[in-house]
Image 1 (cartoon, chains in turn purple, orange):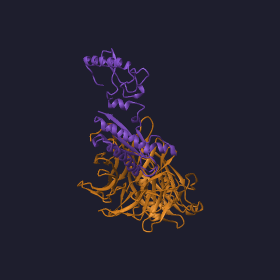
Image 2 (cartoon, helix red, strand yellow; image 1 turned 180 degrees about the vertical axis):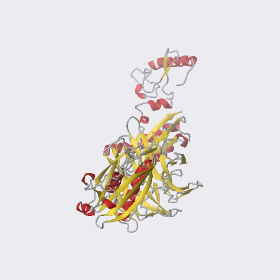
Image 3 (tube, one colour; image 1 turned 120 degrees about the vertical axis):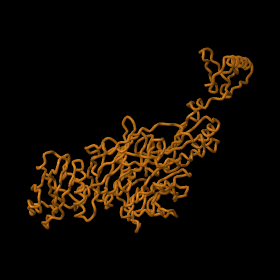
Length: 192
Length: 434
């Protein structure tokens, strides 16, 4: 969380107050999140708004929604596409479905835009077949995911890959359902 | 690329000194053989000893011979007499009892801690001695000497060298409180299990050096698969491959000078050989497919490996010095995890058909494939050093257990561990003569 000096917080308050006043008389509200528009056009709390807490524990101001979120904040949002961090695969396959592809493209763009973000791709396979082949299969899945991220502009030193094969299943059981949950790549983020 | 997350893999290395006397693995014969040779093994005479021995030699021998599927030892309660010398034997009594062979023996003390085991193998029908030996033994080596006796009896009667006095390595995975992976070595009857390495990250693919003095294996202790070699007696270990990407599937050449392994550092998993002295690396496959699980042919001249270059995993053979690989399995959609018989004539593998994975055997010259097991999730087959049995892992419910099956598929026994799930067995070589 960035630290703002008291003067710039006051400045911000003034600016916000000015806009709140301005907005009270117009229909346009300059928030990134369009859903915040109300009939009277008052600036309201919405998903696009961040609160900055003053160290004195006093006033809390709402920043503009075009103030960018930190990478950690974006990762912490439970309803964003970035919250999907496990990619699943068909049996013996490393192919991405259209849906998983778009999830990964969002991750790739996020990583590209945030140089302080690193991700570790952990590839896995279900227990059927030989263990060593499954290590290679888990790796193939992780590499497939990696390529999509790189295509979106992520850089190679932001991505690490490892395969656990069938050694670390998410669920145990000899059913199709259990196996399907184990054929996966997990995206594990770290923000520097 | 700097390491993102440093979870230090906690590892414990224990030397061979920390052996447990009790059986870590329990053995159950699940399939006997009709027409097995009836043999009576009379408890050896220990009356001249002033201490109780920690093992019952005759019982170890009887259990060994039973497990082979070739013999059926007589129930101790039904023995008509208890001779200890051939001169005490009344052959017609044993013939009436339906026995074809009889083993008698005695143990005497030479000096504190030093004993002599004498035994005689007798042919009941011909009424004569087939073999007689005296074996000096220290108390600590009693079980091993009993296995040696089993080997001598087995070879005398079948003509094939026995493999009872050998060891197996396997990985045990524990799922209580915290996940633990334990690499162990045990006798073929499940006794003397010794922990070689314990880790909180996965351990895989143990491979015996040709002399049985070291194990190569894959460890994830540094958060990625790397290959280590560990000398068993000293517990000295070193990382021999830690490149970027995958380092796995180590396999020793027959002369112990090279290790084949799988590296993905150049793009995708390929087979390489590493000279353990010069550290020189030679790349053997250059293919966008997955190439893995290399094993050496008997003379060290060729390598058999798994590749999915034709779409699904199949076995291929390539010259150890490099060249164009040749496909050798054509039946079934999935053939992987090869183990080569000691005479070089057979390969055992994981064979997948219609969604089930069983152990099969391929006769290299004829291409004949025989399915040996009836499980659905069988894996990791490994030949005994006499080529007569195949050890493999199977999933039963949520537990991994080991099975050993005779190569004709007729005899089978199960090895299970009460405390965990066991997998990745590899049968060690014949012990070196001291």
